[in-house]
Image (cartoon, rainbow, N blue to C red; front, side, top):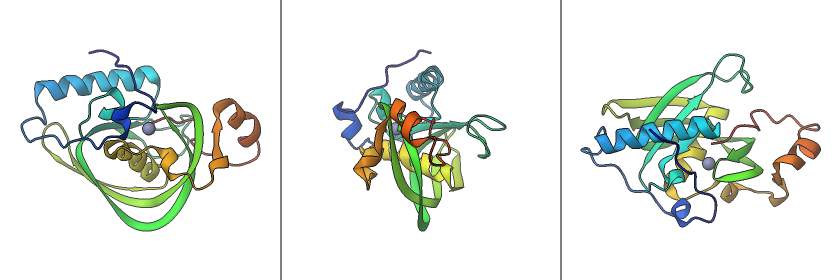
Length: 188
Ligand code: ZN
């Protein structure tokens, strides 16, 4: 296992559509090894989600881990570390809600993005088992952000108001004191 380098905005892999994993690849030694590296990388960088393209592997694989309890992420339901191969995302309700998002591939910046807040996700894990989750609120945002990485999209593509893209320090100084910004410190 090893910590990989997370590639940053401007690297072409972040703008490419990743390819699906074949049946044989899911659960293969190579994908198990990559997933172990992605988990190490996620923990080293201190994020809550990581997609394979962010470590320059253009395949449809992502991990998400939301700490529970009284963490800095507050009241959000915990999600233990889960691996998603070839995920599909369905919007259940198009009503949107906004969060200040942060991305491990766009370090140092925060941006306010509105997304649908009720979705369903289906995917395989590395044992070929079907995963199906219904997600609301911030978790719905996290999954859409993470799976966007598999289609070459970044959160900045969803900004409606370009003045709501700010550096971390300015966010702490000029935004956080004046508006509720739950989970704004999360990166994924
Ligand atoms: Zn991201």
